[in-house]
Image 1: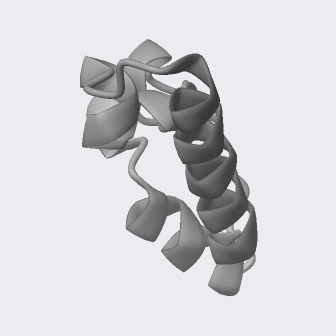
Image 2: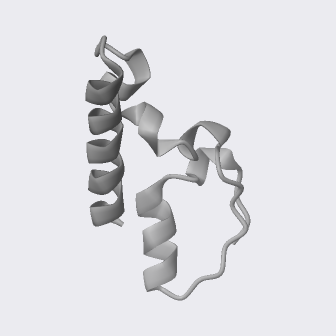
Length: 67
């Protein structure tokens, strides 16, 4: 299946993989950096560096556990 970037979301790709359908859907550039989807990381509300590092570590761990 060939499609444009509008169909590059996760559920669509998962559906195609479950049905063993090969796809050539390009990935959106904004969906590659998953850390920026976390609001606390994207806006950097934390003033101290070690607190921000802990937030980034926590979000990275949550992303890793989801995949």
